[in-house]
Amino acid sequence: MCESAAYILKEDGMERIMDNVVSVDPFEGKVYLTDLLGEQKIIDGEIKEIRLMDHKIIIKENKR
Amino acid sequence: MCESAAYILKEDGMERIMDNVVSVDPFEGKVYLTDLLGEQKIIDGEIKEIRLMDHKIIIKENKR
Image 1: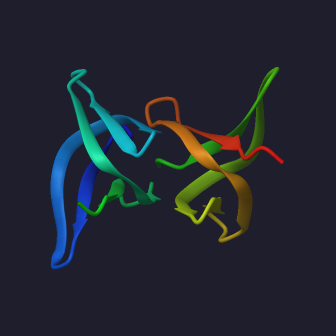
Image 2 (image 1 turned 90 degrees about the vertical axis):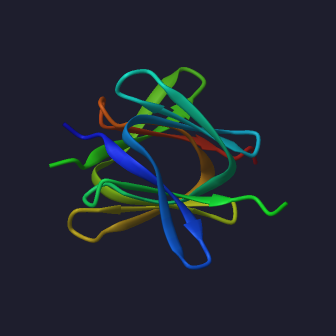
C-alpha cells in the first residue's frame, strides 16, 4: 500500500494532519486531501514537497 | 516500494515522462521530479493531481 501521511509545515516543525492519504489535488490556492475511507480535508495552502519513499506529503499553509 | 510515474496532461491524453519518481517539489511555477537513481527533471508546470493508489503524479504544463 502506498498511502501517505499529510503534514503541515509550521515554524517549529511539522504537524501531522491526515493519515492514509490516497489523493492530493491542489486547486486555486487550496489542497484537497482524500484518505482511504473517502474523508476529505481542504487546506488553505500549497504543496511544498512530496517524499514518496518517506510516505510524506508536506503542505505549506498560505499566510493569513 | 512506493515510487510513482509522472505524467504530463495533454489535450489528447497523458504522456508518461518519468518512472520511479521518489520526490516531487513544486517551486516557483516549476515542478522538480527526482527518480530512484537521483535523476532530475524540471517541468514548467504545476501539479494537477496525485493518485497514490494508482502511483500516478499528473502535471499540467504551463501555457507558453
